[in-house]
Length: 487
Image (cartoon, rainbow, N blue to C red; front, side, top):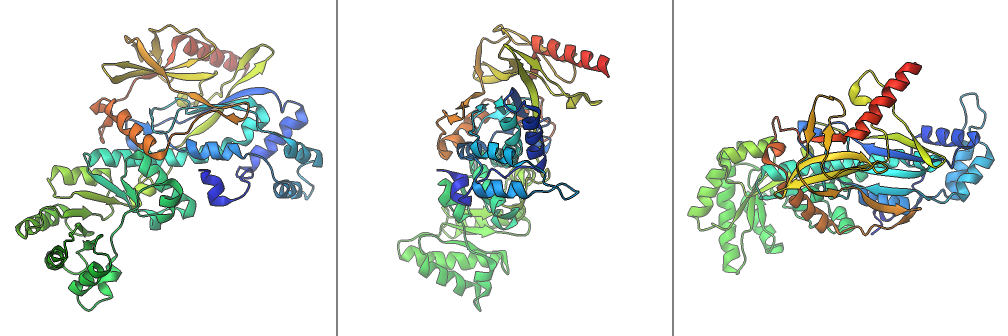
């Protein structure tokens, strides 16, 4: 399915920052628009002070690039843009160039649902520098947010110890697109279903939900609201029991549950949305079991996140299903992943000129080269990741060096490995067969099972070993020293 086309039904080529257009114009005027370049998209820190990140958003990127072209309306808008002094910003010849342009970049990327780490290229773009520049903002937008939410969902799902997690965040998400992206990413990260019906249709995600307090309040008595709901939806009865009094609420739910049983139906569950969830879930469980409703599930919501879920698990709450909303779809308490997109190489004849940006902060000096990530395994567990340049011969057993701290080095004593970036586009044509969303979600589970438990800790996780292959590290060091001599 073309997600972006189905949602927006039009050209998205103007989904960019103005400075991408001004740089593209300057490349064109300079005569280097077609110069071959390489850009890498990566992030510098795992979100939520965690030990890993889950890749997500590539599906959107593929759809976007499959339809990347400027419509007549796009070009007319660009023609009308003005400089601060009122003159036209762009020549008509430039917009004519954009109108005839055909996307022809090579894209390599780490597929959705993989565990990744700081400084690793998630997407590598190779092609004319003008085209590679124009798609920067869109790629960052699509990868950053969805990877953030998928990672949050994975953390919450891990804390839930395999129990179902439902995404209830539609009403608190940042706009329509934010809600849809969040539902997709949350499902990929591990949620079992969403309350967002449009996301269910667009992405083939299971939809789930109960009823609101307003349903109960619309009746004079709580039990009457439950009876009415049971009459009209007898196969989908999960009652919200804390509108007035949680203990009385579960008693009313059980009374209606007996009516359902007489009809050969079943009280699926009850939901608690406030109060001491550890205490009330156990009290409700006791009452349900005593009343013969051992199979009735307890759903809990109320501003939950991975830390509260873990705490409630430690307190041996009787919660079976977790409803997570605000803190999932907003990526609380980190509103952005912070991914960046950096020029790493420009073709010079038959070779490459490698590029880096200097900074007083070592962490902000980007890694040069046409990068790939090699993941090493031992005993079915991830051992280390090596960032290397595909143009440099790499031995099977290598030393990796932390790009920020050269004293942190690791000898990799593993022969089994996998290169993570795979071909997505070749000469502007999609060559990657995108898996369905359920396969991607299953991949996340496999990835997390191959991470050491210490890396998945919510608090003070162990740092997974990622480093530059020694030859690439030496090349980067040489580039830094040479550039600093020129300053």
